[in-house]
Length: 258
Picture 1 (cartoon, rainbow, N blue to C red):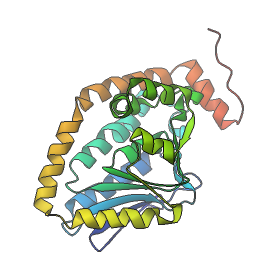
Picture 2 (spheres, rainbow, N blue to C red; picture 1 turned 180 degrees about the vertical axis):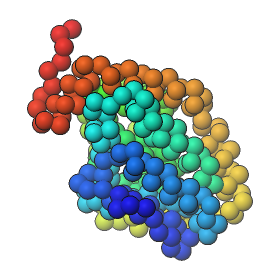
Picture 3 (cartoon, helix red, strand yellow; picture 1 turned 90 degrees about the vertical axis):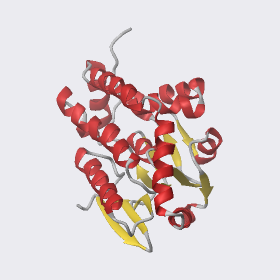
């Protein structure tokens, strides 16, 4: 592990903590470290549940590090998305034990991808969520696949294409969050749930969770392949590069005329 991700095990719970200030933005190295930590938890028979949290105050994960998109080739973006959309999904599916996202602070874009990859999301009262990619000329691709199934087509479209942020109460009302607790209690509540899950039969949990994952898959691999292509096509456009460059320069983007 590098300083971006820490891994520890205590009382049967594996803690994976993001520590990449200021906002825990995900680059390829960090995504691969998260995947490696999940694989480590998979192989450890002493681990009964996994908690993913942030060591950065007021931030869970702000999304992709835009350096990973700015001026990058289609092949480079394919590599990043393969890790974030496919490998992360596969390692979570094969984990064999429950995973819980403890979201205290802001979760955006790829931070939503990371939290949604878990089985349960515990959020703080002041946690906020959103899909701001459209504002910089990108798309929250993976969320095109699963968000309409969770909250319905029309509500999903409004969130994905407006780019607006929303609070924990709205996230819970939409079914995106499992439980809301005071901000100071997020990690403790996540650990409490983890202990509940870890107390179950490991064999039954492994088999039942795998069956649950297959039932919820609904052609994920087929759909995500199409979304990866769409993301790469959009990210290579001049408007997308303008959006990313404008964000980096802290200015408003100038889009091409309709």
